[in-house]
Image (cartoon, rainbow, N blue to C red; front, side, top):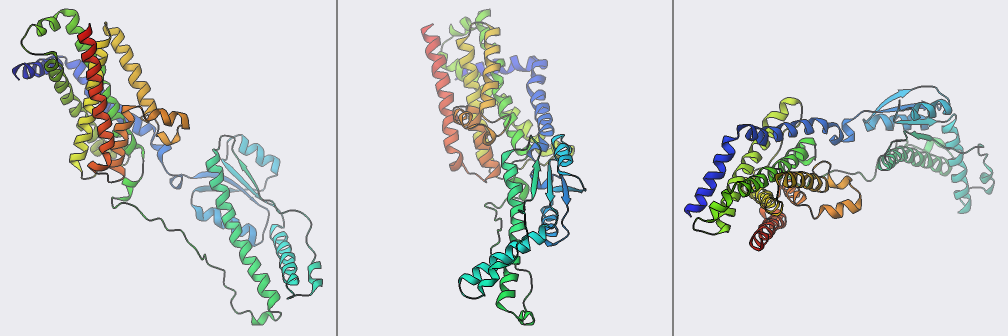
Length: 423
């Protein structure tokens, strides 16, 4: 036990005496969290918070043009500009990037709609014997009714589908209203008998119901809720450079050989070194979470919501720190020089971070990359933080992630122990 405490004391003294390295170890991750949260704030906002520039050319003065324009205004996500331009001018304007979307409502669109609906109603009523067959000869206005929608070349397919669906919804309600009006008119030849001419209401409405009881801002994966835990994990894993460098330095200077001459086993040395650097990782974690809670709101960003399950958060921090320190021990044992360990450690952590969703959320990655993300320990830790912060997770819900991180820690120590023993 004395050897264990002596090893911990030795490692802490080495770290504390290197004040420049200590500042880099703590201050740089805090600065990185702040910068990344500011940079990624806009991409994480919902479309409802943005004003997308839209060009509207409404050449129709009837109910169809009014309904489409009203639907676009009610969506509250567009910054609508109304102009009178030709289709070719509109195409060039959208292609140049001045507008994200453009909608052209053609001349006499309402007249075309009424003509088509009148012909449809007359034909249907005639087929069931409720109207004269001559009514099917209702004159239908020539031409097809098309609303042209132009999208910027860089618009995503999912966003296009969302906009087209919103436009279709506005048009469908007007079509239904027009159909009912014509059916009512045909079935009641005396228009004075038609008393109910109110616009139809939606028979089915959609209501969003929250699945958890936390404040509304905690339900959203905004830049703070993603970047603070993500870069906290990244900073904790980056300790592999300091830790592996310490192991190699001891080996090169002969300190490691002198330590082995003392009573005890190699496992005790590993345990002491791991405990010391785990303590450093936990300090990093606390400082970076405090940045998300107290500093980022003063920069105009949302406040980090961590919930009330402190014990579960502590378990995630410990499991992540153990995984990071275990990886550092393995890298320091396998490589012979500081240049090899630092290069491999830095590059491997960056790769694991990219695969693990640290830079961007996993759901926006290609399917093949999402499969590889399942093998990144940084993804296991980030997923546990998200379950805790965004879904009111408990120790039971994050237990699979904790077990993976502990298993990774044990595996890295075993690799280091077996390699060291054989060498």
